[in-house]
Image 1 (spheres, protein in one colour):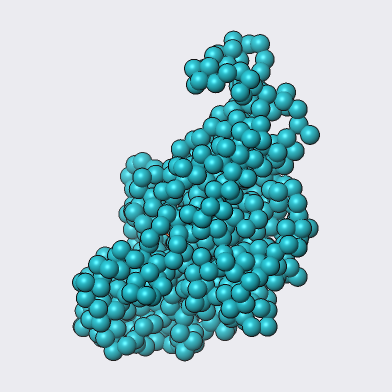
Image 2 (cartoon, protein in one colour; image 1 turned 90 degrees about the horizontal axis):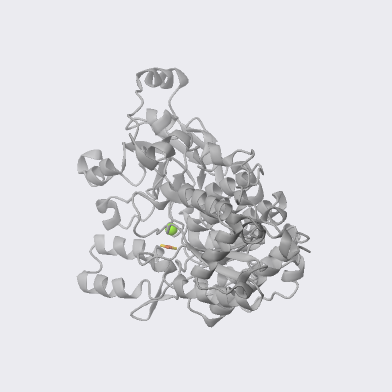
Length: 572
Ligand code: FES
Ligand code: MG
C-alpha cells in the first residue's frame, strides 16, 4: 500500500522548499483548504468534452459524477480539458489527430501533479488516443466510456446512426425517397448524447477498453443517458483513488494476453476494421508486438456472437439490455485469459462469473452464431505486400471470390468527379480502386473506403461491388471493401501502379489480393512512378508526415511507439 508521502503529487505539495510553498499557496488560490487536498491522491480527469462533439456532449456534466466518486473515496479531483476528436465534424479526419491527443494525454499526465487518471472519451479515435497516452505515461488509470446514444427512430422504424444514413442516402439517390423523408430522417437518426449506437468504431473500441481491463465491468455498453452511466462514472472516480493507493498501474493491466483478448472480443462483436490499426498502435505503447496476422489467426477461431448492426440486426441499447459486453464475454471464457487483473483489482474471470445473457437473439449462443468466423480477414498479394483487411461478414458473399477489371481513381475528389461518368463503363463486375487515401496520402487515412456505387448501378438494384483502397472505412459501413492496403500508394505501394482495365482478383477464402499484371510490367510502371509532393510544408501536419507509420504498423508516430527513457520532471 502506498502512503501519502509516496504519492507522486507529494513532490509538488509536500516538502519545505520554496516551490512546495508556492504550490500550496496556489492551491489556496484555487479555493481549496489544506485539509481538502493535502495527502490525498490527485486524480486528473482528462475530459474530451466539447460543444462541437455530440458524442461527448454529456461529459461536461458526467465529469461532475466522476468528481463525486473521487471526493467520496478521499481523493482530490482536477479536470483537464483535452482535445476533442469529433468523428462527425473534424476534417480531413480525426485520425490525423489521434496521435496528437495521445501526446497531449501523456504530457498532461507527466507534467502535472497527478497520481491517477480518469480518461473520458468514446467517439472513435478518442479511446485509443487516451489509452495510448496513458500507457506511455504509466500511471494508474481508468477509462470512462462516453456510452452509446439511444436508438434512432423514424416512422416506426429503428435507425442506426451511420449505417442507416448510408442506406437511406442510397435510397434517395435511387429516387425512392425525397426531401420530406430526408428532413424527418435528419431528426431521427441521432437523438441523444452518446457515441454511435451501431457496432461502429466507438463501441468496438470502448468494448476493447473494457476487455483490456481498463473500465469497470459493463461500462462500455451502458447508454450515455442511462442513470447507470452516472453511477458508473462515480464508481470509476472512487475506484481510481483506491488504485493509486494500491499502486495498480496501467502496465500491470495491459499485457500481451489483454491484447489477444481484445482482438478476440472485437471479432466476436463483429467490430470495426479500424480496431486493427488502433489495437496495434495501443499495444505498441506497451512494447507488445501485435500484427495484422494476429487478427486473422484469432478470427478463424472466434464466432461472431453480437447481433448488432451493421453486421447484425440490433443496436447497442438492445445489446445493453441483453447483458452487454460481460454477457457476451461470459460465452467466450474458454477463448479468453480470465486470470488477468483488471482496474477493479479482480480478475476478468471473477467479473465474468456473475455475468448473464438475457436475450439469445441479441447475444447469440456459441452453437447459433451470427457468423462462424470472426469478421476480419487479412489479405496479402502483389497488390498489398504489407497486407490489407476486409470485413467479409459485411459483404455480399458472391463478391468474396471475384476477378474484375479495375477502374482507378487517384484521390477522393477524382472519385467524386468521375464516379457517375458513363464513359468509364463501370459494371457491377468492375473493381473500383481508390488510391491517395492512406496515412500520408489522405492524409490521415480518411474513411473513404466504402466507395459509392455509381448511380446507374444503384438504380438497377446493385448494392455491393468489390472496392479497394488504402483508406479506412467507418465501422458503421459495409460492403466488399478491401481496406488499409499497405504500403499506401503515396509512398509507392503497388496500388500506385494499377491502371484502368487491369484485372484484379479478390479471393477471401485464400486471403489473396492479386493484380493480374506480370512483374516485368509492374517494374516498368514503377520506374515511371514519381513520388507526389509532401502534403504539408509546416505545422503539425509536417511533424505527422515525417513520423507516421503505415497501417500494418498502427499509424503511430515512430518516436512515440518506441521504448526509451522519458524522465519524470523535477517538481522543484
Ligand atoms: Fe462519434 Fe460515431 S460520430 S461515435
Ligand atoms: Mg466512425
